[in-house]
Length: 137
Image (cartoon, rainbow, N blue to C red; front, side, top):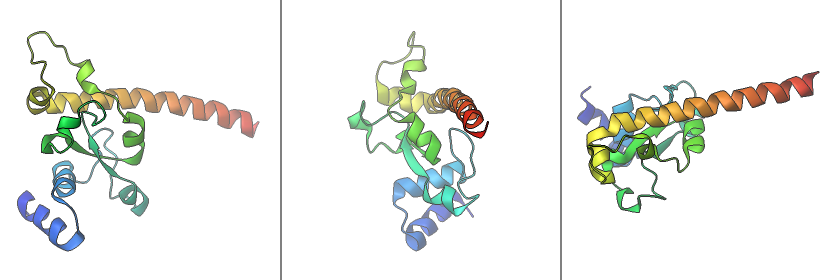
């Protein structure tokens, strides 16, 4: 099914709004940050989010910008919070305008956020294993 048709089905039959339908179709049902399969379980699906790539707390004017959305699993959405991947892009020779950066470097922004989240996940797993070891010893 063509992406446009799939978006129409999600909107018509499953009460997706335009932004959610676009995010799910674009990502093919996977978290854009960690690759988690949103449709692997009902829990994954029901706790997934459509995340603002550039946080709305810092860029309220991009709150409804279609290119500022990415499908996200619960963990990535919660850990990313208001992390700003734009801070990780070299500004030399590039525009200081967030909307221009979002439009021209969207995939790079997602990769920067993905790297940040992978580091967070690694840190959280290390803490989890330490605590688990303490409690299970």
